[in-house]
Image (cartoon, helix red, strand yellow):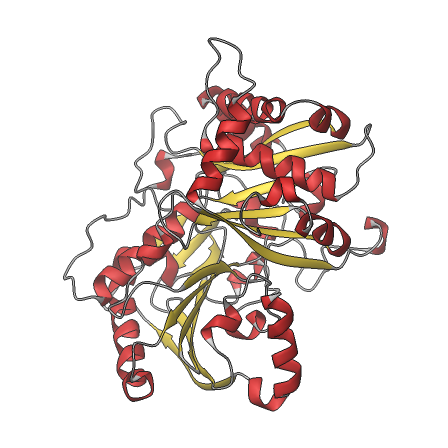
Length: 455
């Protein structure tokens, strides 16, 4: 209902009131010379070249006097960004190739810098951008909407936009996904905020040696500049979609987990919170899509491999160290069986993704490199990214914690799911789902999925 009211207010207010006005553009450089550093892209990074920039949005409610303190706040964020880029130097570079044609991040003096935009949206409030239903305004608040990671050869690998709202501040960030995964994204954001609060050094320095994760040098053929990744032969255009956040309280998560584990046989390993919630979402989306019993449906999770590789990597490893893990079944089997059936498939797929499986997948890709696109996700896919373990609500730049954290509009397709630490704290989890319009309408009415949240 809140989303409908927001749309109505936008229509009544008119476009002039809602326009986002850019007031300044600049390039922020690392405070110290990087000395011609470079960062190789390895097997874990390269498949993401044909994804889009990963977009994140943090909304902060004004603590009073935001108009008077705006320039000071932006100044502090830019100064601390200069400082933190010394530690997280790959984010200050651009994509390039070495003499053998292997892709890397160049951080020499001619290629460094983060694109920073300052803007004002006087008619837009924090609550409007933080509504459960995704606002079309996000593409004006978060930079690089619709920009492929391949553009990192011509653009900075990190872009930031600070937007002064009617009652607060929006920080929109676009990260080139070939440079880092979600774990590293939030490591950077928390470190940046730490410096902005006044710390002289970050508490958790990043580990940058990507050759420790993979030392195989891979050359890949890139699409020609301007060549569309999708053609008429790929079939019909993607369906119209809606994006919405469903908030699950800690008690609802406990109920879901208890329900999924209720069918466990004696001696079986209990299902984790992720496995339980994943099965809950998978079943609900399959119902919402009105799949036939014989239709296959795929569940995909982007698994963090830091502790799965041999030897294990540091938690502080900066880069991509994730792989897509798939499991598939018929919709009829998924829905006719108890929830533990789907959870057991997810559990088994994740447990089987050990160091040997990771090595095998890397070797297969290196033998025949392929740039991933969303059409490769599989039929009736439910794909889960991000993690409620990321402390997104701890990112305090010095004026309090975020009111809302969400994704931008990039890397969304029918069945894409992002999990976030719940705004309500504790065990709560926010589930951000993108679905075809009709399916989303069905999901919104699914009492079994919603639990107590919409009561």
